[in-house]
Amino acid sequence: MVITMDLRFCLLFMASVSFGGCWQAPWFCHDYDCPVYTVVNTYGSFQERRYDASQWITTDIASTRVNDIQAGFWKLYYFMQRINKDGNEIVMTRPVVISVTEASENGGKQVSISFFISAGVVLPEPNDETIKKKDLPAATIYVREFGGIASEEDVNENVKKLKEDLKVVGKQFDGTRFEAAGYDAPWILVNRHNEVWIYAA
Figure 1 (tube, rainbow, N blue to C red):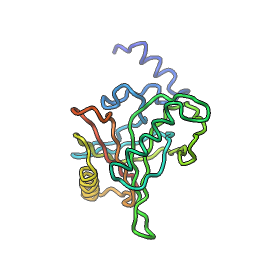
Figure 2 (figure 1 turned 90 degrees about the vertical axis):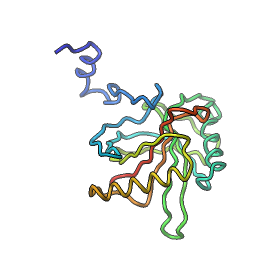
Figure 3 (figure 1 turned 60 degrees about the horizontal axis):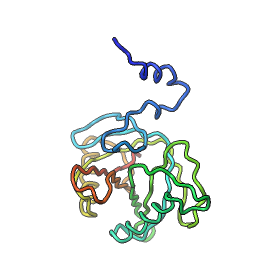
């Protein structure tokens, strides 16, 4: 068996460096940094993935309406583009994630938008105190993929289908929250890749 030098290096230092250094990002990351994951299993309509711990920046938004999502997006985007206390630019990544958690007390929703931050990046202090750093531990996430320009209805329909499919195969999951991940800039009209995420219980 022929092993390339890069693979030898990767195998040799696997024990001493992050697995992310050897990870091959999928096509839909478009050569941007993405959260590192391993596909545990692939079912007919969804994947079970094990994500490494990761860091994000996030801000709460009023709702899943387009205007609210856009307002949150630009707030985080400008933070990445030097609008922070240190004037540092942070390299853009993929995906942008909308998180929705059902609020048990009043039946409403808690909604936020987040950008993934590459490993090793030290975040500057934000000028806007509503922008927060979020450290996520390693987790098992069930993922359903779909294309097109995702509307709120598309996301909700795919979340519904994913929950139904998880029940069919007997997977335990957190039904109080979900996330919608988008990997493409708004001006990209073809070959778009979207995902909905539900966390394993």
